[in-house]
Length: 147
Image (cartoon, rainbow, N blue to C red; front, side, top):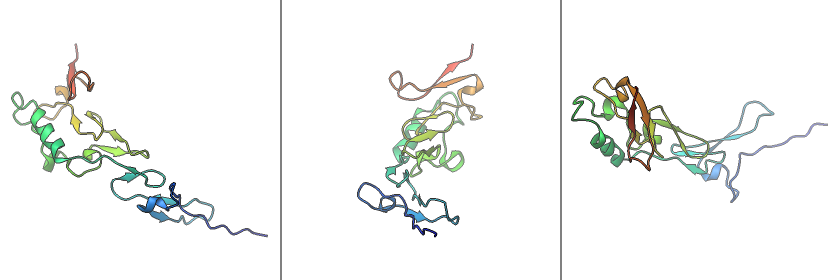
């Protein structure tokens, strides 16, 4: 005798499949478990978490904080250096299953909105140091020079 089971996608605390946000994906394999395909800006088993998204203010802050007086050609440009505004994790990280950003190297912050300083060749810390981000010490990431 064979049992036929119909697996459903994960439901949230209110019983909504994929939190009512995602799309239920039924696997092709018979024994595999259905899962949620979460839409832009959401994550989690049920698509229950919102992912942080970059803002225009983040772009303005990066542009304002750059070492532009010393490195004239180092200003961040979204058209060549990557879009930030409206992008999950400011376009410089990925959203994990809990809705938190895991930032690329030299990017920091809740939304990966802070960038380590770079020179005209876009080398972080001019290739001669390590980027550090300690918000209680300084709002933006800074370089500690190699010795």
